Length: 426
Ligand code: AMP
Ligand code: GLY
Image (cartoon, rainbow, N blue to C red; front, side, top):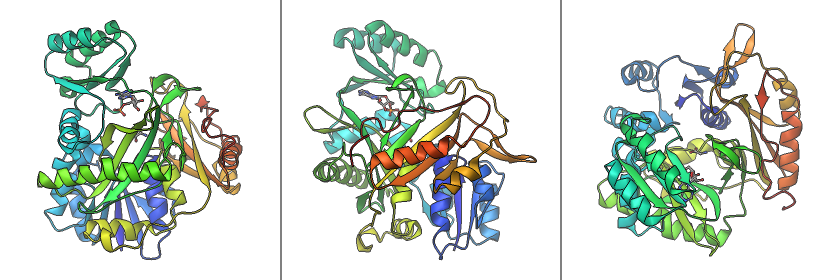
């Protein structure tokens, strides 16, 4: 089978790497891919835009592509799955209607309320004055979210009413384009965050191992929010009992409610959760895709061939698929970023030591890299994700940092405390 992977991040390199291990996958084309997918066995890059549907269709038709796997939310929200499903291709990723679960926070909140899914109390507001008045009544801390896609930058956890008012002004002032024409203002939840990525064919939904991301740029979870500076799995924040509750209280009702709305949802439903001090799971957000960098710790633990799971989803046969099998132990991923990220940073610096890092047994997943004439160079904010496995969290984390220390590029930055909450736990 020939497979297309859409996207160019660490998540897509990990998806391609995982798919390439299956003997049933003959070749993978990454659109547009990065320096890692350019060098991966069985894989090549094709320089097309992720929403160039006609260009992708020409390639897929000539090359008889059997499966398309969409990494990022942007092409899904733009109707990627609709375009290709309607032309007879097999696509792993929801149609535009289902992708609203990520592309509109107001839509997602309404779905959660209809489904009875536990989440923060919220109000959807379409005018700045109304949003500010609501915040003044509720008080701080309070969370202001731009409704639409804002590349992870649309959420402000405001500690004061003034800060919330400023976030509202920025959203309605056009900081996120039309994504900020409507805001969701919600209760600030306390607790520990976890990411549960689940795969679904629209009828059956099965969780993958739960992971924990580290969203803040600074150690001890301080500083600006980023796409994610590192992750580990399986996180003990989500115990087996908790995962059963999440299945029953979050995942099943979400899929049932989507079905009630005549939405065939095939792909990943990613639940960003807060496990409250009372021990209850509450949904912070849903995403319609694999998480990044969560994928870099979840897929290396997967024993079952990924292609067989994705095909079971696209063919609506997930209920009949054998249970998902996992490796024993833990995985940790440390993201190496360009100095300055998530604000401004420079690109184009040569990267050394990737081979040495891989020789330790670690997996180096490329995110913002490209293959230049002189080798691999930096090409984005998050540059590499270094993943290691171990029998314990301590071992996985130590192995990941041992590999990190062999890699260098100008102004390289990483958090040194990935997994700090589980260090010492097996
Ligand atoms: P989101 O883009 O919705 O995942 O939000 C980004 C981050 O903001 C989350 O990972 C949380 O750390 C934080 N956040 C979002 N909503 C809430 C909430 N209701 N209470 C507390 N923190 C939140
Ligand atoms: N790591 C957070 C996300 O993928 O949205």
